[in-house]
Image (cartoon, rainbow, N blue to C red; front, side, top):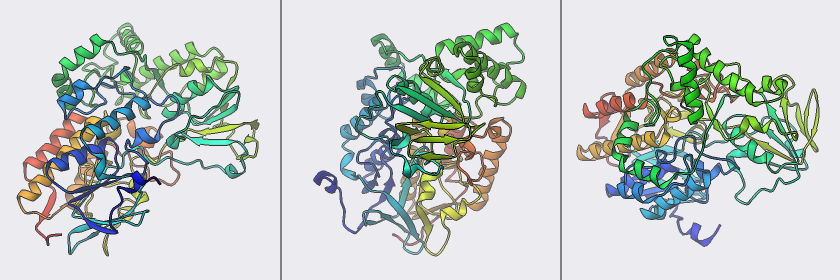
Length: 546
């Protein structure tokens, strides 16, 4: 570890007003706001630089599916006016450059300790403080602990035997090497066709001699239609930023440019419906499921959108057998909808081969490649695009508990339970940013992050002003919120998809629909009401000063 990284090292035990875990979009903004309150704050980050998800996911083709001019902070007018985005959908390097710029511009790095993984946090109910322990031997105390750990931050490792025997090199999209990976003239296997795989595969195809794509489940993907942001487009958006940001905050998805539909797909003519889908397909991006107001509620309406996209896939992919394999057979939008740049077109190239591992699953990795019941595939490199233990994986990897009492892992044994997606009953003074029970992954997450950070900041200000040392959700309020989240989800088709939204990609994980489907604007209003009414649903107590 370099001297610079060591410079952030602290004493074995030190006291802070708050500890933040994670230095991505959420952790850095939380730090910025708490500094403004004059609080003494420490941030722990496992990477060797700030950036969170956008630090780790540096695989070829990694890019955001929310337009860059909205996938950005709104808290500083100067920042949003001075920063220039180059493309409609920013690449990972550009987003990371932006986060680094923010960290430097607001002098945030000096509070961040890098290369440090938090292993556990324990709350002392008598002294009213958390002790946060790290893999570097730190034991830091603070009355408040804030988890800014991200929803997609624990990579799901391959569950296949024999990987250690493989003589080639293997990679995971969730922790891609910092140095360039040269796949020129290599026989490459990509395992997984979710969002990461869909972005990565066209890029790998440009280098590899032979590319084998191992697909278990075909996914819906829509063309991104990425393009350079012209000076006129930039000026137009920057002049309208107050209106754009307000619209995003009040919208269902946290995105101002998504249509808020008023019509049913079934009440319009087939010609109008087709024309609407065509226009959205040609415009690009993932807004197609917002074409009509019942696509995620009605099986029949959903079928119209699914059939439209299936038809597009079959028209792009020349080999009918390959097209069949690439055509999804589940309800569109019930798993993460992807945006791509020439994903389906890639399979028209003669050196790109699709392998159906639903029919013939991978049995093991051999020294020379991948083995299935249908045959062996000789490979020089394997890339696992197997996604994440989403939303709960990072939180549950830590030992979070009350001294002599509840552990988060036990409390969430049958699925996550939160109040507002911000706190969990029985773990006082522990805040979570974009946790289960909030819009999080169903929204422009930067909008959701800003809302959570601002709510937590206002809450801490209120606690300080009213001499409250402890805040803890009431068990009844939490149960009511969990029921509300489930009830809203069950009114939709969303829980019917075998997606990572319900933990279906992780064996043994409880099948619970985790995000809040009620929409960003509605959710924001509910959170604001709770605060305005003196934090209804929370137990506030003076306790003993920490």
